[in-house]
Length: 187
Ligand SMILES: Cc1cc2nc3c(=O)[nH]c(=O)nc-3n(C[C@H](O)[C@H](O)[C@H](O)COP(=O)(O)O)c2cc1C
Image 1 (cartoon, rainbow, N blue to C red):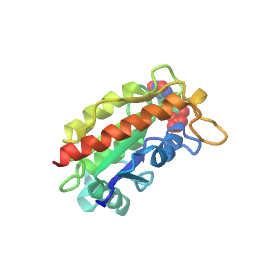
Image 2: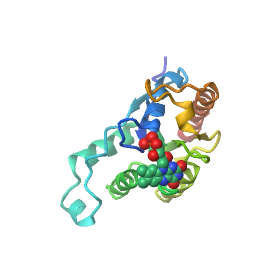
Image 3: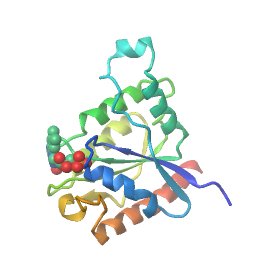
Image 4: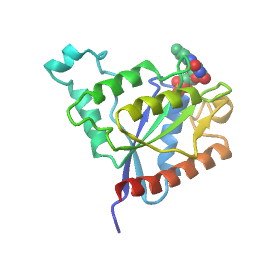
């Protein structure tokens, strides 16, 4: 049997009780059989981006993150929305990676998901993330979109499990379509 597609998931929230982290943890069980999903290394220890620091050398945490993205067949980003946009720590990580030699997002298939207690479920962040990643030549997956609004009603605070079947269904559909998208990009 061919090797499974190696997909990594990056969570855009650093909060312990994060809804988005709960969704990220649920992905392996919702992935199609031909896809294996594991967590990307952390980016929470990255310094604030400064080209002078990078000129001295990329921090080891940045190198580990970049290498994991480079080695992956695809990346899923599950993120919170902060002030209608990308949370600063995640944007900082993308900025570091974007300026590494042979930056890892070039031609990389990327799917986006978001969860928020709010009405529009982080969708504004999704469009900013698409814009930023398109600027560095990522191959952005289109539809179906996974936009989890009213996340506080759909994710069990105590267990961290997704407690809403339609949410699980749309994630399952997106991951199946993302597997096909990765194959098309690779062909
Ligand atoms: C700095 C900040 C800005 C926020 N801005 C938004 C926003 O623009 N849209 C939104 O839907 N929720 C916003 N929220 C609320 C988050 O959606 C909420 O805190 C959510 O739980 C964050 O995701 P997490 O649970 O994965 O950490 C904001 C929260 C913070 C801390």
